[in-house]
Amino acid sequence: MTATLLTEDQQALVETTLDFAQDHLAPHALDWDRDKHFPVGVLRKAAGLGLGGVYVREESGGSGLSRADGVLVFETLASGCPSIAGYLSIHNMVAWMIDRYGDPDQRERLLPRLCAMEDLASYALTEPGAGSDAAALTTRAVREGDGWALTGVKQFISGAGAAQVYVVMARTGGEGAEGISAFLVDKDDPGVTFGPNERKMGWNAQPTRQVILDGARLPAGRLLGREGEGFRIAMNGLNGGRLGIAACSLGGARSALDRSLAHLADREAFGTRLLDAQALRFRLADMATELAAARALVQQAAQALDRGDPQAPYLCAMAKRFATDTGFSVADRALQLHGGYGYLSEYGIEKIVRDLRVHQILEGSNEIMRVIVARGLTEAFR
Image 1 (cartoon, rainbow, N blue to C red):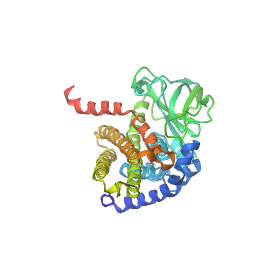
Image 2 (cartoon, rainbow, N blue to C red):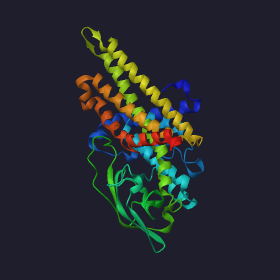
Image 3 (cartoon, one colour):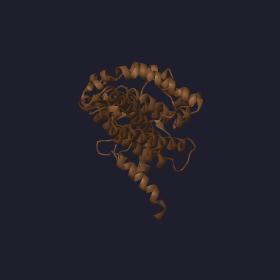
Image 4 (cartoon, helix red, strand yellow):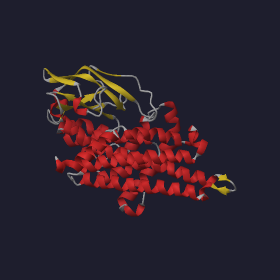
């Protein structure tokens, strides 16, 4: 990250977040991954720095930061642990959705505890049969007295079981996107249960479970926004979520690059430091250049989202695709530069590779990002 491109406030934000990542995330990341431990207490410490409500308005209890500020936060957090930074991005996406679309009672009831991370939040859109084709979801919400009853299964839900608050997309009308509404579901609502914690390649420091809704009964005040507006709410939330995950890929890859520099400086072969080998120096130069290009695209998309640019969804998709592909590629090359040591858990590189791989899938797979970008490119030719 180039400090000269940051304002004084942003530089202070990065320094504070980096101190937190180095003190509270990095020293424990390998143990959390091995033990599949979700460090809720550490998340609440992060909330003490304002990281539980990054985009939530100050009057609602949040930090009121811009998207351009937020991507700096999540990149820096991910340098300590991409898994925890990724969950924080999702929690903040949900908190923003409630602040943006919630009514005064919902904001007053939920946001103070979410911003303090006394309660955690999860986003529940994906289903076993509706991943990339999110508009085809089958979870159904029907009116029951003055409230609602929800039935269906949500799949791959980060934080599920530990989170208290879930933004759940369910069908209240006909087929397609127009029939979907958003609901605020509480962990303790009758009819809400969870599947077992999934066994995953990476992101082991946070739980991933099904959310099972068996006629889950909700009072009338749990509809988020207006009926039939859920798909738009979901997609608007994902614009910011994609930037958060893109930034997490940058932070994890930057950590892998930094570790590679230190490793090559310490290792010798054929009588010279590996860091002095021109072929390896060229690899490092390419890795740094690609990360800088990805960071610039993420910042461009974040600034577009901040100013309400109509092209923001297109740019967010472009940034998410490029940054997550680049981040994984850089981390994979960092592992190769470590040789056999990169394959050992204790060096931390293989964990970064495993954690960053899922970023190419979640918040909309990179194939779907290409669909969005191509649609934007060809709009004038329809």
